[in-house]
Image (cartoon, rainbow, N blue to C red; front, side, top):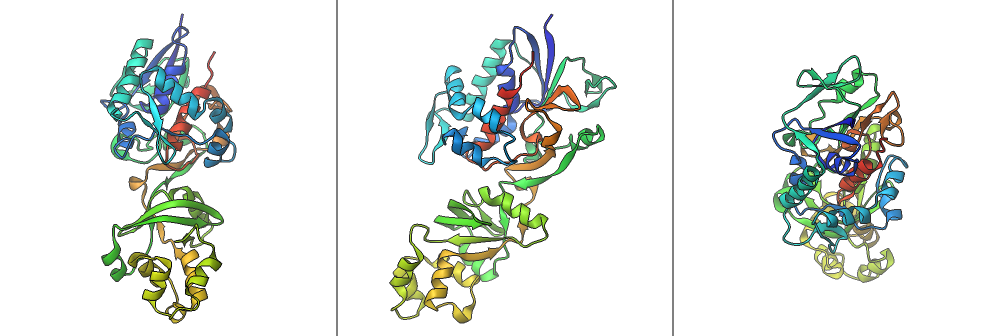
Length: 388
């Protein structure tokens, strides 16, 4: 007789897990609380369906915190392995100029989801909708819709605390805590920074991108771009630094980011261009090819008394210090950290207190930047689960 496997949650890690399990040995059922599955998966595809990243594995694994928690999973099911699997179910991919991986041009997010669901159906995977987990019974079976579910193995893939509109609201956290499983409060990740702009600055510069810059925080440097918003900054140059920002907040400090507007130009080269020029804003801007927004930003966070002193001006061009007031709320975040403490799970993502229960995906306390790294982490975890 086949053993019963219940997968709670209908997101990316649940799909891949159901695809990888041996349907000849197990009866696999996915329980989803919404009327449809993959809602967050589809929301992620609205800005361009970035499925994974093409970085070599030895570089890719460095994108993840906490420590080496995900290394084994990422090494055993790589971004190449995932692309090969997609190709097998009829979803060819390509690498974009940013080294991010997308479905072949013309393939829509809903088509990717449909191909995955078709594959699961062909394997005999059952999906039950409007089935909500609320607790466990005395035999550690999950209670779904107020009924104890008899199962041999339970895999939780209920998501984190971001994008609540998709159903990923983190409401399960208290249930696990009451079970004696150590958890951490959810915090926003891959979200905007709140910066106290002057009214005059933001009135003139809201919505303007800062391109080809490098931003650093605590010696961590990220090249890319950021967009000036009414509340602060958004963009791919700030998301990879967010864990350092959170770390600073947790210590009671006011974190600062440092912007380098000319990351390809050494300081001395820039200084040579202006040191014999008249000390005027327009002259310096023309000499260094700085636009009005960059100049306004430098002025906003500079000592006016020394603003046009060449050495000070170049320091601000290369290392403009901007204090961060706070992070944007979880409702606006792309992902979250927090959830189940990683020390509560074994290497195969089963709970140490109950090896027949597994936890994967954003429920666990790990972090990665956008760019396909989050999804790849979920896919690799799903592959790492071994049930005999």
